[in-house]
Length: 90
Image (cartoon, rainbow, N blue to C red):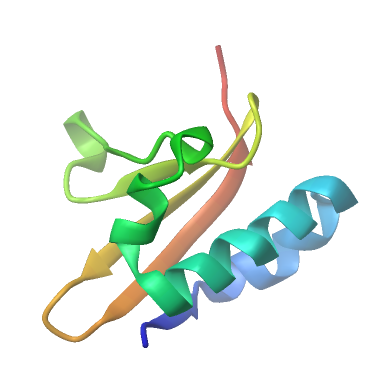
């Protein structure tokens, strides 16, 4: 079982996120808690990927075509640190 830690500022900003996206985020958290990051890779819709550049070391998963969750996974400790849920800028 994985433990999810959410950044304090995320807990405040998540209220501004549309309800549909908040529900997708809750589903995302359940998958990570039970299956870990590997569970996300099994579901193509999440399009889980490693980030590059200044975000190197972090990962991104799609909650919708526009919304992403950005997180970092510590495999040795079975912990996931959620940094942000934001609208992807094209």
